[in-house]
Image (cartoon, rainbow, N blue to C red; front, side, top):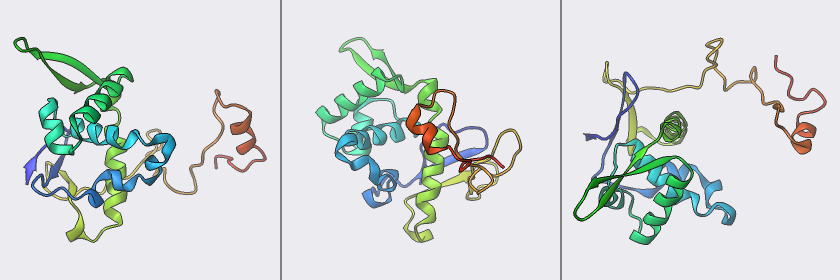
Length: 183
Protein backbone atom coordinates (compact mmCIF):
# COMPACT_ATOMS: atom_id res chain seq x y z
CA UNK A 1 0.00 0.00 0.00
CA UNK A 2 1.11 3.55 -0.69
CA UNK A 3 0.14 6.92 0.72
CA UNK A 4 -1.73 8.83 -1.98
CA UNK A 5 -3.31 11.88 -0.43
CA UNK A 6 -2.85 15.13 1.39
CA UNK A 7 -5.52 14.63 4.05
CA UNK A 8 -6.67 16.83 6.90
CA UNK A 9 -4.83 16.64 10.19
CA UNK A 10 -4.73 13.14 11.63
CA UNK A 11 -6.21 11.29 8.67
CA UNK A 12 -4.50 9.39 5.86
CA UNK A 13 -6.02 7.60 2.88
CA UNK A 14 -4.28 4.49 1.60
CA UNK A 15 -5.02 2.91 -1.75
CA UNK A 16 -3.84 -0.30 -3.31
CA UNK A 17 -2.99 1.24 -6.68
CA UNK A 18 -1.86 -2.07 -8.13
CA UNK A 19 -5.44 -3.30 -8.20
CA UNK A 20 -8.23 -1.12 -9.53
CA UNK A 21 -11.60 -2.81 -9.41
CA UNK A 22 -14.41 -0.54 -10.63
CA UNK A 23 -16.94 -2.30 -8.37
CA UNK A 24 -15.02 -0.97 -5.39
CA UNK A 25 -14.59 2.55 -6.64
CA UNK A 26 -16.59 5.33 -5.05
CA UNK A 27 -18.16 5.65 -8.48
CA UNK A 28 -19.87 2.30 -7.90
CA UNK A 29 -21.53 3.93 -4.91
CA UNK A 30 -23.11 6.57 -7.14
CA UNK A 31 -25.54 4.80 -9.46
CA UNK A 32 -27.66 7.94 -9.86
CA UNK A 33 -24.71 9.57 -11.62
CA UNK A 34 -25.05 7.13 -14.49
CA UNK A 35 -28.46 8.46 -15.52
CA UNK A 36 -28.46 10.01 -19.01
CA UNK A 37 -28.89 13.53 -17.59
CA UNK A 38 -25.71 13.19 -15.54
CA UNK A 39 -23.70 10.70 -17.56
CA UNK A 40 -20.71 13.04 -17.68
CA UNK A 41 -20.46 13.27 -13.90
CA UNK A 42 -18.97 9.81 -13.18
CA UNK A 43 -15.73 10.46 -15.12
CA UNK A 44 -15.48 13.90 -13.51
CA UNK A 45 -15.93 12.29 -10.09
CA UNK A 46 -13.07 9.91 -10.84
CA UNK A 47 -10.87 12.94 -11.61
CA UNK A 48 -11.93 14.63 -8.35
CA UNK A 49 -11.07 11.46 -6.41
CA UNK A 50 -7.65 11.33 -8.08
CA UNK A 51 -7.03 15.02 -7.29
CA UNK A 52 -8.00 14.45 -3.64
CA UNK A 53 -5.49 11.57 -3.64
CA UNK A 54 -2.81 14.07 -4.71
CA UNK A 55 -2.55 13.54 -8.46
CA UNK A 56 -2.00 16.77 -10.40
CA UNK A 57 -0.57 15.87 -13.80
CA UNK A 58 -2.50 14.70 -16.83
CA UNK A 59 -0.47 11.51 -17.29
CA UNK A 60 -0.97 10.57 -13.64
CA UNK A 61 -4.72 11.17 -13.86
CA UNK A 62 -4.91 9.06 -17.00
CA UNK A 63 -2.84 6.20 -15.56
CA UNK A 64 -4.85 6.09 -12.35
CA UNK A 65 -8.43 6.51 -13.55
CA UNK A 66 -8.35 4.90 -16.98
CA UNK A 67 -10.09 7.54 -19.09
CA UNK A 68 -9.22 8.21 -22.71
CA UNK A 69 -7.21 11.37 -23.40
CA UNK A 70 -10.16 13.13 -24.98
CA UNK A 71 -12.58 12.27 -22.16
CA UNK A 72 -10.05 13.20 -19.47
CA UNK A 73 -9.29 16.51 -21.24
CA UNK A 74 -13.00 17.29 -21.38
CA UNK A 75 -13.63 16.41 -17.72
CA UNK A 76 -10.61 18.35 -16.46
CA UNK A 77 -11.76 21.38 -18.46
CA UNK A 78 -15.24 21.09 -16.95
CA UNK A 79 -13.79 20.86 -13.43
CA UNK A 80 -11.62 23.93 -14.09
CA UNK A 81 -14.60 25.82 -15.55
CA UNK A 82 -16.70 24.97 -12.47
CA UNK A 83 -14.00 26.05 -10.04
CA UNK A 84 -13.21 22.59 -8.63
CA UNK A 85 -9.68 22.50 -10.10
CA UNK A 86 -7.21 25.21 -11.12
CA UNK A 87 -4.97 24.73 -14.15
CA UNK A 88 -1.44 26.06 -13.84
CA UNK A 89 1.74 25.61 -15.90
CA UNK A 90 4.55 23.58 -14.39
CA UNK A 91 6.82 23.39 -17.48
CA UNK A 92 7.62 25.92 -20.21
CA UNK A 93 9.02 23.83 -23.07
CA UNK A 94 6.83 22.19 -24.02
CA UNK A 95 4.13 23.92 -22.02
CA UNK A 96 2.54 21.46 -19.60
CA UNK A 97 -0.09 22.11 -16.98
CA UNK A 98 -1.05 20.56 -13.69
CA UNK A 99 -4.50 20.50 -12.15
CA UNK A 100 -4.78 21.31 -8.46
CA UNK A 101 -7.78 21.42 -6.19
CA UNK A 102 -9.19 24.84 -5.40
CA UNK A 103 -10.75 25.61 -2.02
CA UNK A 104 -14.06 24.52 -3.51
CA UNK A 105 -12.50 21.26 -4.71
CA UNK A 106 -10.88 20.59 -1.33
CA UNK A 107 -14.27 21.13 0.30
CA UNK A 108 -15.46 17.97 -1.49
CA UNK A 109 -13.10 15.77 0.56
CA UNK A 110 -15.56 15.23 3.44
CA UNK A 111 -18.19 14.19 0.90
CA UNK A 112 -15.82 11.65 -0.63
CA UNK A 113 -14.84 10.38 2.83
CA UNK A 114 -18.52 9.90 3.74
CA UNK A 115 -19.25 8.16 0.44
CA UNK A 116 -16.24 5.86 0.84
CA UNK A 117 -17.35 4.97 4.37
CA UNK A 118 -20.85 4.23 3.10
CA UNK A 119 -19.51 2.08 0.27
CA UNK A 120 -17.14 0.20 2.58
CA UNK A 121 -20.01 -0.50 4.98
CA UNK A 122 -21.63 -2.49 2.15
CA UNK A 123 -18.55 -4.69 1.65
CA UNK A 124 -16.83 -7.45 3.56
CA UNK A 125 -13.53 -6.20 5.04
CA UNK A 126 -11.47 -8.25 2.56
CA UNK A 127 -13.39 -6.77 -0.39
CA UNK A 128 -12.59 -3.11 0.33
CA UNK A 129 -10.10 -1.60 -2.11
CA UNK A 130 -9.34 1.44 0.06
CA UNK A 131 -9.81 2.33 3.69
CA UNK A 132 -9.49 5.47 5.78
CA UNK A 133 -6.82 5.35 8.49
CA UNK A 134 -6.08 7.65 11.39
CA UNK A 135 -2.47 8.67 10.76
CA UNK A 136 -1.72 9.02 14.47
CA UNK A 137 -2.93 5.57 15.51
CA UNK A 138 -2.76 3.60 12.26
CA UNK A 139 -6.26 2.34 13.02
CA UNK A 140 -9.09 2.32 10.52
CA UNK A 141 -11.32 5.36 10.96
CA UNK A 142 -15.10 5.17 11.16
CA UNK A 143 -16.20 8.59 9.89
CA UNK A 144 -19.59 9.99 10.85
CA UNK A 145 -21.41 13.21 10.02
CA UNK A 146 -21.90 15.45 13.04
CA UNK A 147 -23.58 18.77 13.67
CA UNK A 148 -20.75 21.26 14.23
CA UNK A 149 -22.92 23.26 16.63
CA UNK A 150 -24.03 20.47 18.96
CA UNK A 151 -21.58 17.68 18.19
CA UNK A 152 -24.52 15.31 17.77
CA UNK A 153 -24.62 12.81 14.90
CA UNK A 154 -26.56 14.35 12.02
CA UNK A 155 -27.56 11.12 10.31
CA UNK A 156 -30.45 10.15 12.57
CA UNK A 157 -34.09 11.13 12.93
CA UNK A 158 -33.27 14.16 15.06
CA UNK A 159 -31.93 16.02 12.02
CA UNK A 160 -34.21 16.62 9.05
CA UNK A 161 -34.19 18.64 5.87
CA UNK A 162 -36.27 21.82 5.67
CA UNK A 163 -36.86 24.45 3.01
CA UNK A 164 -34.11 27.04 3.05
CA UNK A 165 -34.29 30.76 2.31
CA UNK A 166 -33.76 30.24 -1.45
CA UNK A 167 -36.26 27.37 -1.77
CA UNK A 168 -38.73 27.60 -4.63
CA UNK A 169 -42.40 26.67 -4.50
CA UNK A 170 -41.84 22.95 -5.11
CA UNK A 171 -39.30 22.69 -2.31
CA UNK A 172 -41.51 24.70 0.05
CA UNK A 173 -44.48 22.38 -0.67
CA UNK A 174 -42.25 19.37 -0.10
CA UNK A 175 -41.43 20.51 3.43
CA UNK A 176 -44.79 22.10 4.30
CA UNK A 177 -47.24 20.64 6.84
CA UNK A 178 -44.66 20.18 9.56
CA UNK A 179 -43.21 17.06 7.97
CA UNK A 180 -39.70 18.38 8.36
CA UNK A 181 -39.90 20.12 11.70
CA UNK A 182 -36.51 20.13 13.37
CA UNK A 183 -36.85 18.50 16.78
